[in-house]
Length: 263
Ligand code: GLP
Image 1 (spheres, helix red, strand yellow):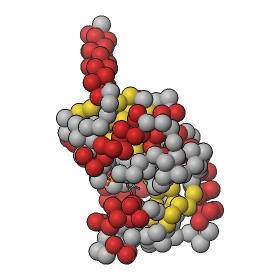
Image 2 (cartoon, rainbow, N blue to C red):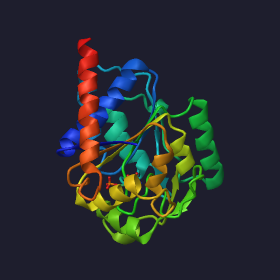
Image 3 (cartoon, helix red, strand yellow):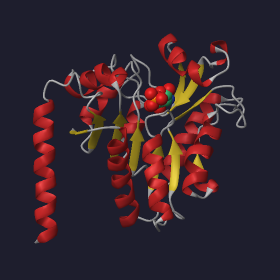
Image 4 (cartoon, rainbow, N blue to C red):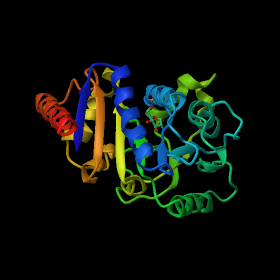
């Protein structure tokens, strides 16, 4: 796992956006996995600036990680709408290429299977952007999610409902179920980039990066991924035992990249 520790949220967003932009540069028809939540917002902002500066995203497709069950697509907190407002519209993606699981489907299991089929038909996800819950969830894969899980219906923990209550007028309005890509679905992405900032994420980051791979801390499954990057600010890195080692390896990588550019 590549761990990159940066000064603040702005640098974290710029780093993640840089990785995404260089992938789109190389593969204009790239398939991007997109996350909701506050963590990736800075990444989207910087990416928006790169689009304004000429990055061509007209052929890029996107798949969201998850969706609440029972919120209509025009509800301000449905991930259909959140993705439209924070990703599709500001980046100028083609809406017909942006996919979100259907949390309003009458047959939710069929909607989950259809989502997996759509990802496969697009050729798989090239780069999956991730945030992390304070309890270690990625997507909405709550603790004890199967490490082999695919897109399915999950019940949200009380902790996640409380964390997300800030987006709703009344905590009771936070849905109890969701559809989420599974941990194995996420592992299938060619590359993953997880962004986390702030002290509230420090414990989860230490557990998923340095703890055992275990369903209790679902993000730890990324240790099994060959191209997983975790980008954090100093606050989110606070509980990492080997922080100095990650800073050292990152400085070596930068040195090596500079040398390669000047060759
Ligand atoms: C949400 C989303 C996750 C997100 C996480 C953290 O509930 N389903 O994809 O990574 O919780 O959110 P935030 O970035 O706002 O802390």
